Length: 359
Image (cartoon, rainbow, N blue to C red; front, side, top):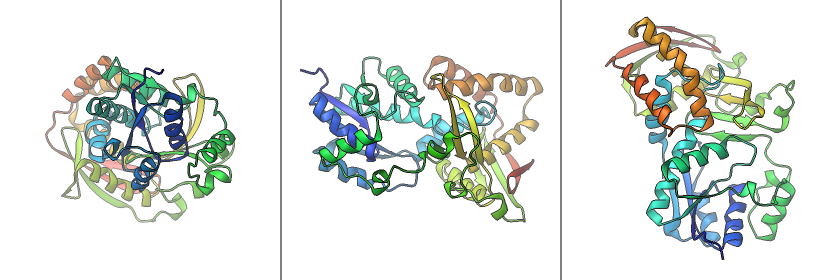
C-alpha cells in the first residue's frame, strides 16, 4: 500500500495535468488537492474547477488563487531591481513564476494536511528542477511525485489513448496533433517553444505572436512615458499610480502596440540541453530600460559596476531554480540596499523595436 495519502497537484485543467490527476488517483489511490494559479495568463480558470469536480475532487480541495499582485510585487519587481537578464537577453518570465507556484503548493499542503506535491513538468526541462528545489527549500520533508519521470505515457498518442480510456475531455487541437507551440504565459511574458521552432533556421511565424504587433504594423509616431519609481519599483505612469500587477499589465499594452519586447533565442538549460524559445515581454523590456536609466544617475559608479558584476550570477540562480537559496537572498539584500532613492522619474520614448531612455 502506498505511503502517499494526499497530494497537492499544480493543475491547469489542460490535457497533461488532467491525465496526471487521474493517473495519481489510479496509481497511488490517494486524495487529490488541485491548485490552479492566476498569474495573469489571460485564460478562463473556472473550467479547471469543473474538470476537477468531474473527477471526484472535493470542492474544499480545489484551490484557484489570484496571484497576480504577489508575482509582480514579490518576485518580478525584486528581480528587476537587479536589472536581471539571463545570457544577455532572456528576462526570465517562466523562471520567476515557478518559486511562487511552489510556495503556494507547500502552503496548501500545510493547510490541507497533504504529505505530497506533484507537478506536470517533463523529465527533460528546467521546470522540474525549479519546482522541486522550491518544494524542498520550503518543506524538506515533503514527498514529490513527478509523473513524467515515473509513467510510460511518453508520447502524445499514449496520453490521448489514456484520456479516451478514462473519459478525460480532449480539445480538438490535441486530437489534430496538438497546439502549434508549447506556451507559458503570465503577466511578465509569453513563451513559445517546440514544433516549427525546433528548426533553428525557421523564422517564427507572425501569427504566433499574441501581445505585440510587428514592427511594420507599429505606429510611426513615438509615445512618451514618464515612469515614476520608488525604491527601485515602478509606481506610476504619466502621473497615474498603479498597483504592481496593474503597472505591468499597462506597460504590456503600451509596449505591445509599439512592437516592443519580442525575442528569439537559443538558451542553455540547467539540465544540459540547448533550447530555442521565442518570448514576448513588452512591459518588462520597458521597465528594464527605464530602471537602468534611473540608476545611471542615482548610483555611485562602483556600486553600479558591482551590481553589473553580480547580475549574471543572480540571473543564473533564478533561471536554475534557486530563488529560495540563501545565496540568492543574500544578493537580494545587497541589491535592495542600492535602491534607496525614494523617488525618481524616467522618461521613456517608445517607438517600434528601438527604445530611447532619458531621465
